[in-house]
Length: 300
Image (cartoon, rainbow, N blue to C red; front, side, top):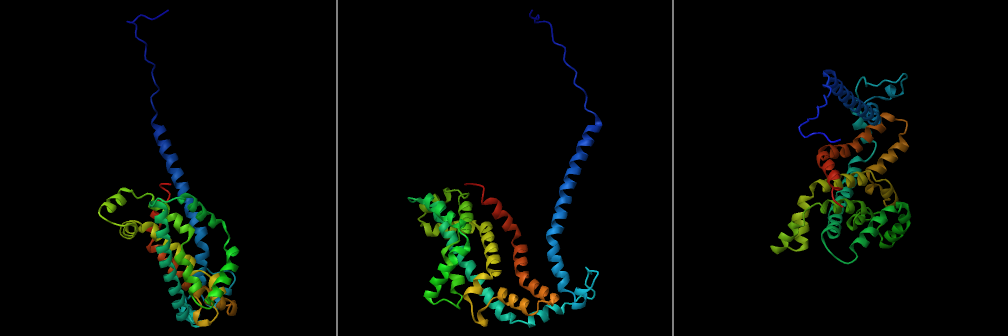
């Protein structure tokens, strides 16, 4: 039977929310946030513990380092460990060589990788996607596979015991950096390219005057990664550098470890000095580094 139109349905009464439900929900959320922060703090302490141990050892004397039970706080603090440890190796020469190789390599990586990435992201040409896949496939090759052919090639050029094998390859691009820059370039609207071409700009000027100034975050990522990889490189200088006045800090630190391996306080002090430029660069460029990593994957 159908209901008459004049008969209204009786509304169903909903239970009134209790006051304690909102408080309980807020407590649960606060507990979840507190748990996340606690895990992050514990993880940060675990990852920072080796670095703190290195700083602690670098500020102690030989007796304190060998003392049992272990002392965590240096007493007294020996700042002269840094000066004495660097006096055992030719630090000014090693620093000069490392800085020269690092600066030239970073300059080559920024210029070459940004130019190749600009071509893959903004220019239309046959086989572009296929060539990009081939470029990415080279990242699958272990570095040791190409090391022997590269050594034979550089020996044929007469580049052994020079800085050229450590610098020149940077001017031919790096697949990982090209991929990062290409992904970032694809997030920039192409209307900027069209407007620049209407004004008479060539592709070179668009790359140099438009794309590079807009790419500071991802360029900071390239600079940071390139600096870390080149500054800490041990295998390349070990293979190609022979004379002492051309060696880098990584080789000098290895020689120092072999001679004074029981002087842990000097070894940690020298290691901390070598590591300090990397830490300083990351601290000053952290904002650009995070922004560049986030924005590179916004558009495929």
